[in-house]
Image (cartoon, rainbow, N blue to C red; front, side, top):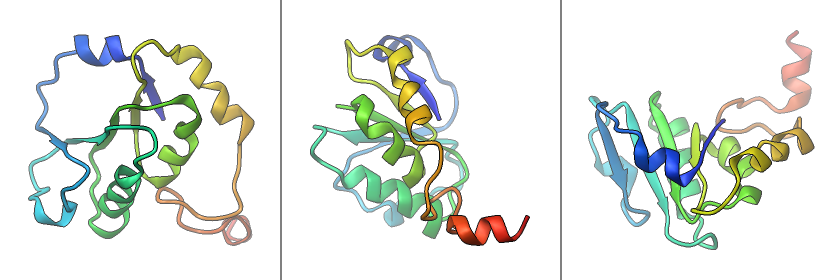
Length: 128
């Protein structure tokens, strides 16, 4: 997962076909054909509807483009974001992006499947 600071996200112009999706919009209601990036908004860290949107976009709708978390994104949310289908997380203003990478080192593997790796760990290991 790529982690961006708020300043990086704000300064980087993006010419790709993107859409910012409010967390009360059903992703099944939008046309995904020409989109290369979807920004999902976390208005506050306690509102987890964007997790469901990301999972729905990845698993049920088969969206292959970039899914970016924006808004009130905290470091302790990053592992769950990656597991539900996010590619990029834009940290809340004032947070250090270098400290965020340590979250992935703390949790290197999971028993359950995720939006990215759908097989549980025991099944994935048996196919090697």
